[in-house]
Length: 363
Image: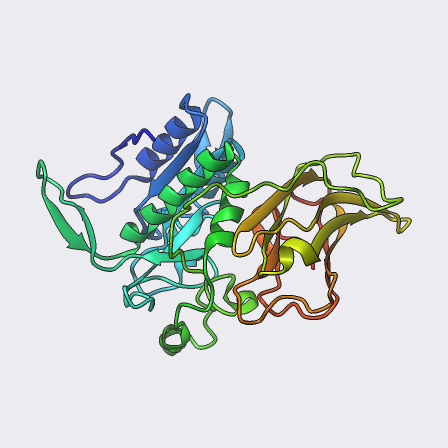
């Protein structure tokens, strides 16, 4: 990978919002086909979601969040530091921008850093305490530093690995892979929630995924091998046509099977039409290697959808193994089974709204 350094901060006066916007636009227009931005900068109110910036060429106003969203739509994965203010990350930019992958920090014991921001605008945690890093104003100096600015590059590196392994520049697919690689139940969030609620009673969970997932996601390891794709020659269910109309929404299914999933498990994702007929979006019958992620994507229109996982031997996942299946819409997690899938089948129905591409579906 080629690393391009763009200076957006001065030595004494902090970081410039305008310089950061120009840097993002530079990355968007760069000739590289796979691009990841790491923004290890943050500020409370310094980069605001509401501030309107006038584009004279297009004669329209835009916000900093618009810049991030535009970069993501144009194939640039944006990874941001959530901030090290022990505060709700939604108040900080650029990390609070909805299009970014916002990263909090953990220590060597997999506990949240004492300084990391938290809340529903944090997507994932990564190592960010006592990280060996280059020292400014020296030719070859290094020192140990802590903070979300050190955690974000871990995620940016994995994003590039995924882009190369899948030969993709789709930022939403890359986000889905990163969240699928993460482990849950590793981070002790109880103490952090207590601290947050002392500051603001009824404070948010530690991350936007914590309530659904049984714990915030923690990036413990990089991608060690390319993830297998769903096969294109999987047999179709009898009488069920394949989805004939594509759309603007990225629908992703992720499966990490147990020791028996390769032979026993099949998954299907259907579009449910107004007349209750079904069209097949994704399918795989067996072929799920133990402990390996199998990921399939499809571009679909708005509408009603149903996910089905079926176990031939009617015993679901082994509760002693880390097995799961998950569904993402436009990079946002809408369903995750954990290893709680037992019995014959697991079904989940959801709606993708046509009001706004990328909006969270109504489940």
